[in-house]
Image (cartoon, rainbow, N blue to C red; front, side, top):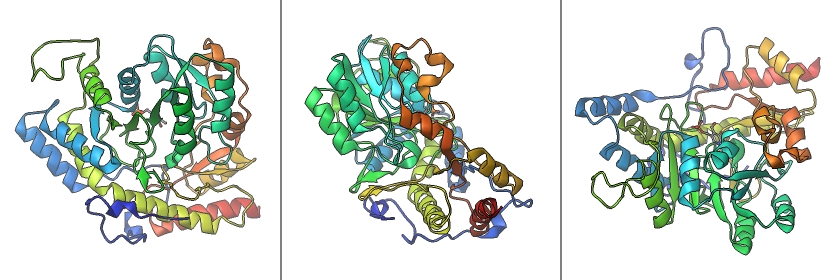
Length: 398
Ligand SMILES: Cc1ncc(COP(=O)(O)O)c(C=O)c1O
C-alpha cells in the first residue's frame, strides 16, 4: 500500500503524520462488540455548534461560506457550494453542468441508489456501464462500448466507491473525446486521490456526502466542488430557489431551484470534522494495512489499491463466495459487517421501468453477491482489529 501523505500539503493540522493507531482499548464497548461505523464528533465540533447557536444565525450564513472555502481548498478545487446532503449535491451538480431533460448519463450500477436517482431527479436517463471487478468502479472499456452504440449520452457520473477513486484519467479522456460532462460521485471518498490530486477537482464538478457513516460528517450534509465558476454560480443559485447570485440578497429569482441549503449548525460540525479528516483517513488506512497483512493467506479477496491511487477506505470490503456464512461467524464474534450493495441499481424495483435497466452487467451482479465490508472506522482500537481478524480466521479454520 502506498501513501503519498498528501494530507500534509495544504496547511491542515495533520498531527504527527505517522500512520499508527493511537487509540487504546479503553474506547471499546464493554461487551467487546465491534460496530461497522462510529462517528467521532469531538469537543471542538460541540463548541463550534454552541457558538453558532449563540450567534442566532442558524440557517445559511458566514459559517457555511467558511466551510465551503475550506472544503474547496482541501480538495484543490476553486469553488464549493454546500448542500443539504449528498443526493441534493448530485442533483445540484447535474443541473449546474447543464443536464437537459431526456439527456442520457452513464453511471455505475454498483453504488448507492442516489447516484442514479439524482440523474432521474434532474430529468436525465441513467445508463449503466459495468464495473471493473477489481476496483468496483466504472470500467472505461464498458463506457466506450456504450458510446460506440449510442449518440444520446451527455455525461458521466463515475462513483468513487468505498473510498477509491474511479479511473479518472481514462474516463476524462473519453469524456473529452465525446464532449461529455463529468460529475464525480465522491460521496464515499473525501480525501481519496490519484497521483496526489484529490478527488473533487478531477471533472466538471464533484459531490460529497456528510452522512454520519462517511469519512467526515455534518449529520446530514453535502458539497459540490468545481473549478468552473459558471458551474459554481449555477449551483449556488439552484440550492437557493434560483436566486440571482449577484444580487446581494434581494428576492430576484432567475431560474427554477430548490431549498437545498446546508445549515450553519451543520457547517460548524463540518469545519471541525474537516480539520480531523486527515487523522481519520490515516486511521482508516492503518486499519486497512493491518487487515491486508493479517488476511493475506486466507481464501478471500482483499481490496485493491492501484499504483498512484490513495484509497481512503470508507469501507474495507472483502470478496468471498461464502459471504453469508462469513458474516454469520463474524456476528457470533459480535463483529458487525455490511453488504454494500446487495442489489445493483439496474435490478432495483424502482428501476424496472428505466429503459436501460434490462442490461446484463456481470461484474456488478457478481460483486453484489460476494462483497462483505468489515469495520474500518477511525475509532477502532487495536483490540477491535484483532477481534475482527480472529473472527475471520476462526471462520476459515472451521
Ligand atoms: C455513492 C453515494 N452517492 C450518493 C450518496 C447520497 O448521499 P446522502 O445520503 O448524503 O444523500 C451516498 C450516500 O450514502 C453514496 O454512498
